Image (cartoon, rainbow, N blue to C red; front, side, top):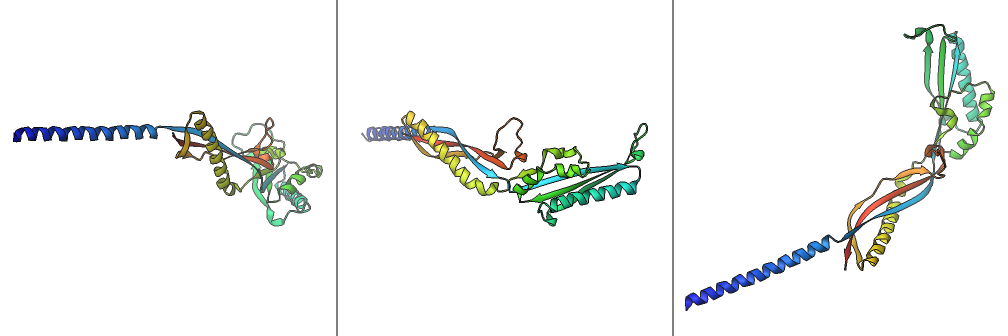
Length: 243
């Protein structure tokens, strides 16, 4: 009799253990299935921004066989450019000379044949200012400089004009990320409604890369040459789905 009781008790414990184990396995499987239910959506945010910094590099050259005369010519041209900018109401501290280059063509190792002018001197006068509108207006009057006899170099594409820069991206990021997340959730909610589910929390999020593009999307548009720009970010977000 004691042996029968022992065998019965052992069998009962085994049965309970199997039942409990089955319950845990079932719950784990169910939770696992729940964890696998999610939707990946993209949220877009765009905002117009105005450049707050302009950099304009005006490069000009002078040539000749007399180095002193060429130096005097480049100094005179530099003064003309500076006066043009000062008379356009830019501040002296916003203007600086850069990249003085002197070439002696007779000293070039691989020179062949005669040279028309022995010396070539190039000078760049750079304007750096926050007054982007004034820069744009002044650039329209570039012909006044050319009329003085100044030889503007086409190197660095001076004719393309000033470069306009937007430096306030970090100030826009928080609000734009929030907007992109909101738009992503709206897309997830539409998907959930179509599938008879509801949207839960965020499982994973990728902020995305902020891109600054020209506001006016015309052929050949260059963002750096437009004062007004469009800032865009596309965030990728995974939302959990619930019954």
